[in-house]
Length: 99
Image (cartoon, rainbow, N blue to C red):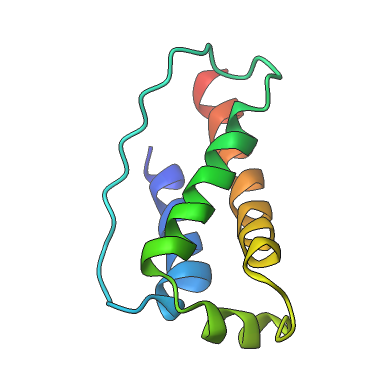
């Protein structure tokens, strides 16, 4: 399990933490009744919801946009870019954990 924790920690440290308004940790609880790795794109939905929450409440969007070279991007584009970063990790963790 430490491999998964390390992957999540590295993602948080490199892609989320530097751009938070308040330097803090996050506790995430996911309640899901869908079976894992069913091809229903629930991981994509999770990544999009998580990205939306980060942008709405925690992320310094202007600083994040500058770091990615997305200065002229609107908030929706930032959310999609962040969700894109989050989704492959989620797929990797789900497929390796449940198989």
